Amino acid sequence: MQRPVKLDCRGVWKVYGSNPAEFMQAHNGAPSDADLARSGMIGAVRDANVQIRDGEIFVIMGLSGSGKSTLVRCLSRLINSTAGQIDFEGQDLLAMSEKELIALRRTKMGMVFQQFALLPHLTVLQNTAFPLDVQGVDRKTREARAREMVELVGLGGREDYFPRQLCGGQQQRVGIARSLVTEPDLWFLDEPFSALDPLIRREMQDEFLRLQGLLNKTIVFITHDFDEAIRLADRIAVMKDGRIVQTATPEELIMNPADDYVAEFTRHISRAKVMRLASVMTAGVPDENYAGDLDGSLSVEAAVDRIEAADQPFRVLDVAGKPVGTIGAQAVIDVLIGRGQA
Image (cartoon, rainbow, N blue to C red):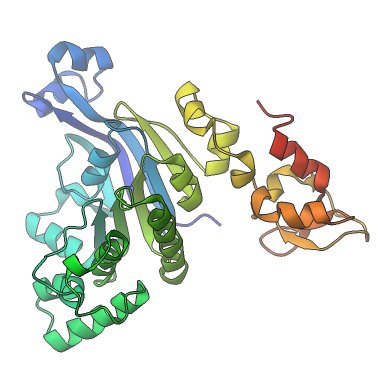
């Protein structure tokens, strides 16, 4: 069963230049690239349509300048879009007053950016509790909640440290704890790990997935790194020149890229990382001779060692635990060497 839509974005534009609203009206809300160029306007986001479902990790990715960060700022209304409609939990985000918007951000939206933006004169605990302080929550309550978040992100024992006493990965953990302290329903993360060293970045991705397993947030995650995207995402929207080129699962992007731009992003990604056993199995109920059971949602990479070491094929199970097919070493080898793929 498909999860309900948490954030619904339809026909959103962000145009920079002289009188962008007039410009959009003059072109019936749908200017062409030639119209933009001719008028000296910049279409930072162009006719974006995004439906983000409850509890999913939705990744928006693209090269620098593709419009991904601008789109997220429109979705959170940190900036006002030039045209379009954005509904959050059925409410018209663009019709909200400044007061309503501030209340929404304080209670239902969490944000983490590439820059840690910690207050240097506050401790880890005080930085984490800061959003609750702004809300007027009493000190005892906000510090108790902040301690829970500090513990959750693995910084227990460092509550009294100042930002200068922490490494980059630890500072980012404080930023994550601070964004979660208000228990947001929707969590925006804009390239949160890109400033970190590769090893720390990998650790933070692991931590992020652990937290999501515990909290089940609705997440909009921005990155330019496709490896990071496929590791984290339930679905990915690929942007180019302000437009969403394709929205799909990581596996669908790999197997059916919409154009050469998307194909280039996926060209060097190991298919075994992305392809699921359910996609490469032989369909049909297996006979009695099988080596064991494997979840069909597992990637080929995650299961390759077990499959190759077995003398018999494995049964593949669907989400209900029902056998729906088999997979053996030959199918795994085909994926690893790219046989039968474009």
